[in-house]
Image 1: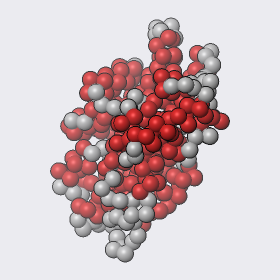
Image 2: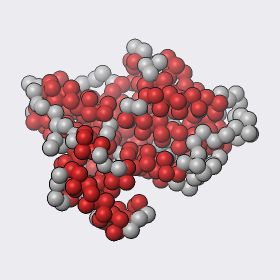
Image 3: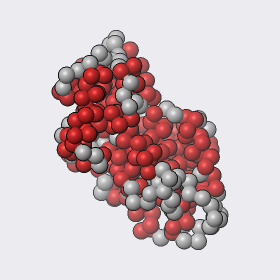
Image 4: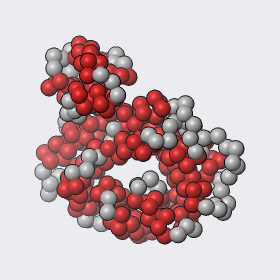
Length: 344
């Protein structure tokens, strides 16, 4: 890899871990805002591709395919490696290959996605085992999950399910509730067995038992589970599916995750239920700062906690909230969460 290559994403090194934490917590709007605010500070290639991978995940969640393709193109140089000479260079290649695999999968270039995910695994396999365990533990290169889903999409169902089980074993060894719940979701997607519902319930229970805040993953699990419940309306309570969908719908609306909201809407249609609508015009009237403050307040943070999170004064938070209430036509924060995710 050329030593003179420019960083993929210019953000300060220290906050990259924070961005990754925001992504795992499901705070997509905040993660994108953090990347935007921090743009302009240089960093090493490894942290650049980590930030790019986070941006790819957020943009895919928002349905911004144009931005995703551009990010993937910028990662090409970092993914084109022969024999990495050290762990740091291997890290860069693995992150870049995995991100480009996600881009290819989003564009339905399934064979190319499988090739890139597998290549990321090959790079990691060339390292000492502790290095791969470390990467898997921080959840940033789950190449087996991507490859398993790509195999299923190419019709290689047994291979996909086997790799999904291998991924689950790695996740369980990591001790991370998020990794385990995500791996269980991958297995439920890759495996065609009748126990898929049980896998999703186990994933939801894993997050709940650990008290781990992962709103996007939880909403994805709820939507997947609701879909399976609707496949067997004679044996399952449709009210459970409806409750799951309403929760996922509200979250997706707050974070502006239109692909997820689209899935939820289609399932609600099957139930004969009318989807809730986000107050698009009112939300569009909010500034970026107002959206950030409103989202944190809707998540239950106090004004002081919001101020600490955004590094502003409490008075600034109060001022932003007063403008948010006026624009949304509400009088207090007690209506804020419902207003951001439900109809007027």
